[in-house]
Amino acid sequence: MSTSATASVSTHILDTSIGRPAAAVAVRLAARSGGGGDAPWTALGGSATDTDGRCKDLPELPEGTTHVRLDFDTETYFANEHSFEKQAEAQQDAPRVRDSGVFFPEVAITFAVTPGEHYHVPLLLNPFGYSVYRGS
Image 1 (spheres, one colour):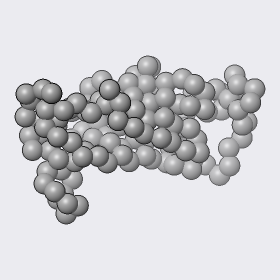
Image 2 (tube, helix red, strand yellow):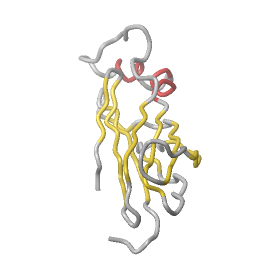
Image 3 (cartoon, one colour):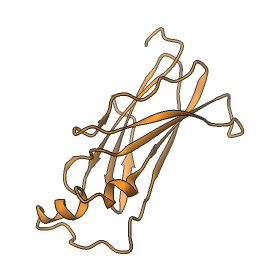
């Protein structure tokens, strides 16, 4: 365990519908201090995933952070001409046409943190579902 007074966060996204990293996904970071759900969220800023699906430059968490929220803009990612339709063409078994738009236009992941710990939160994403876990 680190001796830092704050927790740190990193994330990456894998588009499981194509088996590749999800690039250019906007990610926003928010934090709150104190227990319970009554504390207000403080927007800390954001970034976007790189070509490897990693978001390497998320803002630092303020001292005293107890909860973190990552918001992923999945609607823009799936609407992008470089994502689903073009990539589906390269995959014979991928659906060619999606139903009425993106099912999950955003994914919001909220989790508790402990000072001095690092939290890597991978998002496994496809047009109709997602999974998330605490990585290493």
